[in-house]
Amino acid sequence: MTFADLGLMPELLRAVEDAGYSEPTPIQRDAIPIVLSGRDVMGGAQTGTGKTASFTLPVLQRLAPHASTSTSPARHPVRALILAPTRELAMQVYESVLTYSRYLPLRATCIYGGVDMRAQTQILREGVEIVVATPGRLLDHVQQRSIQLNQVKMLVLDEADRMLDMGFIPDIRRILSMLPNQRQSLLFSATFSNEIKKLADQMLNEPQLIEVARRNMVSETIEHQVYPVESSRKRDLLVHLLKTTIDAQVLVFVDTKFGCSRLTHYLNRCDIPADAIHGDKSQQQRTEALEGFKNGTTRVLVATDVAARGLDIDDLPYVVNYVLPNTSEDYVHRIGRTGRAGKKGKAISLVAPEDRSNLAGIEKLIKLTIPVHTVEDFQASGVRDHSDGASTGRRGRNEDNAGRRSRGSADSAAPRSRSGDESASPRGRSERTRTPARKKSTVAADGFDYAKPYEASDAPKAPSTKPDTPSRANRPVAFLLGGVGRKG
Ligand code: AMP
Image (cartoon, rainbow, N blue to C red; front, side, top):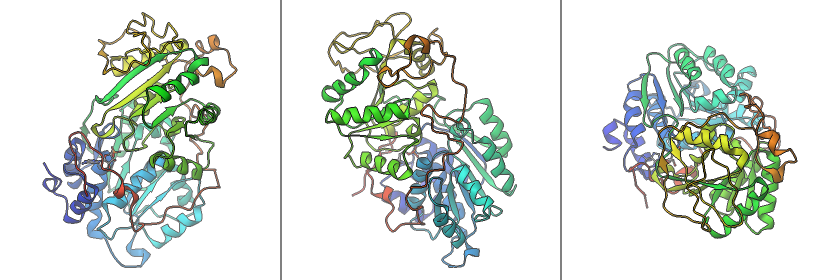
């Protein structure tokens, strides 16, 4: 099947060809005709499946009859609103909009917090058909009357489950109440909890359900590995792996801002080029850190969960969980940064004995018993309740070992306590294993408060409408679930 078979218009087919896509991915095959027909959609898809294009392309086509070269703001009301939970994700969606709309005179912009509102206000005043926004900043503009939502005909809610985790649902409900009832709505989520279903009931009208991957499942192309190690030895093990086993760029997840900075400094001291991305960094620093990583100058990007969702980094072969995440679902999202687009990836977790129950929860969720690898001088025992049976005892063993499918481990799925990084924290280890599960809150593990992520003021200018050369179009083309292609 080709993109032309899906009924896309020539301007979009050209843009898709420029992007180097030879055939649609499963979510694109399913979603594009339905969105083009005007129906509401409830879409479930893993990250890296091509879901952004699955909604962006048909949204553009449905807006195309309204495209206008007039300079009058009145001819460019906001007709499509795309909501994303984080600035990074909003920027990525916006870049996709630019890539696919390059042959259509439609205006688009991206509004998010952490930057001065004035530049955004100016763009909104000049008129723009497509707005990609984070909810909080959008509401700031509504309050300042710099945006009118009464002509919105299409609404996309991306990463709805993350919106929920971050406490954005009240904001979303407020935004919904400002939109015309006559509209098409699309909701995308990696997982569908009861709360998401409730939101969908409220937001969608007889939606078509599209689900291309089983819920909470991870890409088959990812190889999972566990390295049992005492917390105090983690950083040395990481350096050892980076010098002997991990032969490419790696995204390393930690749990605290402090741990993030500390590990980054340590790696740099060990001559491993590393940068940090966490919620205390200004938007500009976060953008620069991400750019440095994407263009290859930084070998290791150390991140808190702020970076866990939505980052689309081409060719990222390794993700390391320096500290396991608080919830098993976050493991799925974190490791979704690798093994994208049908490529192989490795998810390496450094697991201390006190993280045992957390590991059990992850294995239960992904229905996989993750093979244990050990490196001489770094082992720790007791990361599994039953045994560490798969231990190899060999130094840096790196065999092709995709893991055993378990028949529903009986291990407890109770989330573990915060943090396993002894080196970064003075708190006692034994106490922490008994700390009750963290309640859902808007404050991330690194202290970043998602409820007000927009305070930083030292950020770059807001993105303008359509730059001459959309950066995404120049990026290497992903190989996606069999949909391969590379142009030029
Ligand atoms: P997404 O799931 O939307 O984050 O997309 C993941 C990656 O797949 C992005 O880098 C897209 O540019 C790329 N992509 C999207 N659709 C296709 C396709 N049909 N063929 C190849 N790559 C694609």
